[in-house]
Amino acid sequence: MAITHTWKITDLERYSNHEGLSDVIVAAHWILEAKDENNNFASHWGIQHLDLSRIDTENFISFNSITKDQVIQWVINELNASNQISDEDKARGVVLTEVLEEDLQKRVQAENNQRLTGVPW
Image (cartoon, rainbow, N blue to C red; front, top):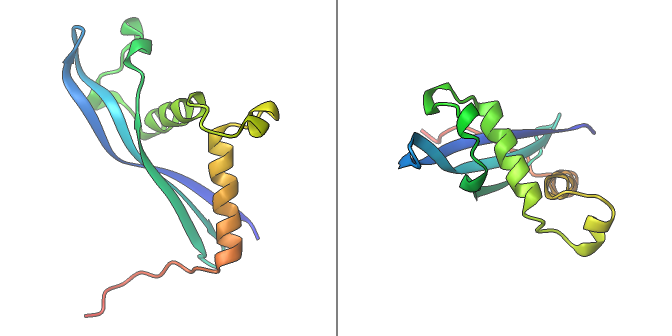
């Protein structure tokens, strides 16, 4: 079965002012979801703090111009830079986001946990 992974940004935290810049994003709340064609579902979520020392003031993007895809890429980059994986995985060149996706795939396949929606009234 094919597993679809979807990254979502649910909220952003920002400083109103940081080193002469306005509305600087400092953290992103994220969810990584996986589901198959039968709607079996699993997810990981977290809050990723962004490394403000890497801000490129020459190419700073204003808060109102930032896209979801840009923030998702920042989160992926920060997660992978955190090296919170086993030494064995590091030696194989694996990055954290691959580990997260593999875990979700296993859970979707093993748990047969369909995601249902609706209210009882």
